Amino acid sequence: MPIPSHPPVPDPHATARRLPLGRGEHRQLWLPAGSQLLCHAPLLRVTEAAQWQVDRLVSRQSRLADGECLLLQHDGWVGVLAPQGGELLCLVNRRQRWHAPLLTLWRRLGGWRHALNPSRAR
Image (cartoon, rainbow, N blue to C red; front, side):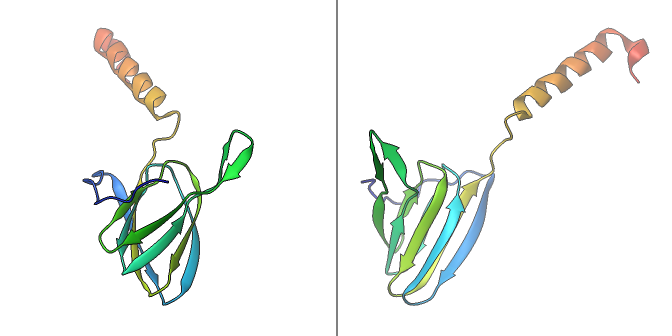
């Protein structure tokens, strides 16, 4: 079971999303791997997305107290239960698309081509 901790420094490109929760409210939300969940409630129960371990489907559950943070290891649907109400702050890292590094390389190569041959600068 992952151990909740105090929040690390968030990624400057992370998108913050507030999730207000009423007393006894349960919510399901899809979050990508690497998301940080920061608790602003007396107690939150977080059920992470189910994952296969050998031949069993396992779902990790954590209890977060006020000010504690949980870093999600896998993409998927996360369940959040707030027995006493409160708020959950989700810091979601913006993922690069799989082709983003290739586009960057392509643009750089195009820039070098124009620098070597100024007549084709258009």
